[in-house]
Length: 556
Image 1: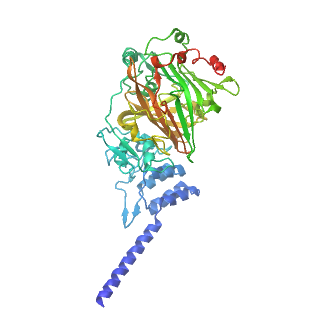
Image 2: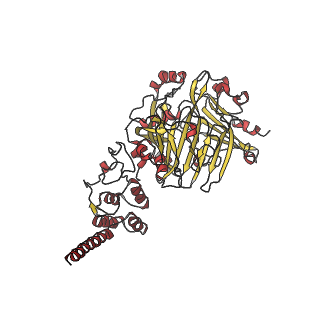
Image 3: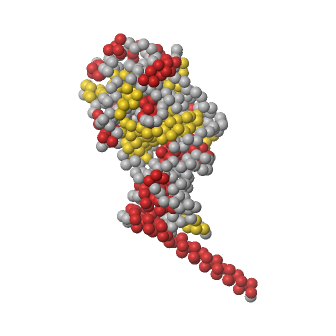
């Protein structure tokens, strides 16, 4: 009898504790509760009061805070969520040091824990929690990751998979970690594998380095009265080999803009530039383009021709012409880049159906290039096509990222073969990934030019040796994460220059519209870009591939 009575009493106590715990938990707010309140138009101040009084029943991560901010949460509400008491199963947790978020503390980079690196997915327990910064504009996760200065090594042979990727998240750009997180339509497949190899130096040609040593001391930054920016006294080579503040970000943007490219780069119908676009429903359409890219000025590969010296208003030109599909054949684009950085690049398009060429509009900066997810301001060899005059850049930090670069096997031109599909991610058959040193910059249009522009900012992970972009994260005008792009830069051997950057394969993911575009200078057979002396004679014709007047002769 006593035994039964004791058991009954214990059961009663357990029931009472369970009811009490459930009652407490029912008063707390979940993330969905907060999102519903915001969607219902409840004032931020009222929601903040509820959070303060009731607490929450989840551990807010940077992703949670971003969702709340997108739903309309202001800075004060986010502060309450970060510092709120949490009622988790059986235990009520309080933040260890509930402090007030001040403007100074909001944007201050925070030292990290875990793997001793800044990780935007760490739990956010208070404003000094690693990986969380609350901005008055948007939750700027990319800035947080870029602020990490932690360096290290990854042993050759390291294999990154869907199971262990968090161990290496400190070496990933934000967009890459988003693909691994799996929150978006585009995400890493379950069988993803990335093999890490040794980090190999990528040296520029001797003449480019000589030009850097000879001329870089004279290059200066200019801030114009109208808010535009520029550099002066540039002659050739790397403008700022050792960029420092002030204007370090803009100096790095100039280094990227004038990064080494060969005098001539060409692709013929036998080794075309291949672009493939894929929709969320798996529909893939591809185009193949012949192309001629010419560095007419600031060229360090050799002496310029007499024709190039005459055409001294432009320093770089890009000519591309559709070879396939047949219905688009002969559609040709010509882009001229003025030496004067305050002048916009000049766009010309030959339209086969009209049998004439048309001048492109300056508004085309945000228009898709030949039906791809790249816009005019994306589509340039080094990874940025906006120019120097109308843009500014802020240095966010120096870090190491996992990148596909160097002398990897040219398998990118046979899309979707050799890719993890439907993501369009390179398979291990391409070769090893490297741990590369990068400088991360936040590139934005100057304030007076932002009206109507498609991008709010572009985060560029710029290789510290080559100054080529290895990864980009792009945000829309409301500062919401929009696109990410892998830029697999490839070195090619050219005599007498040696190994130089010239080839590339890139995949850009549009997270908002669920599109992707892949582009590669490699053919299905593995042939890659032709450089300088290897360019066939007919593609060296300066007038045919440099002047808009000759566009009219394309179909004659």
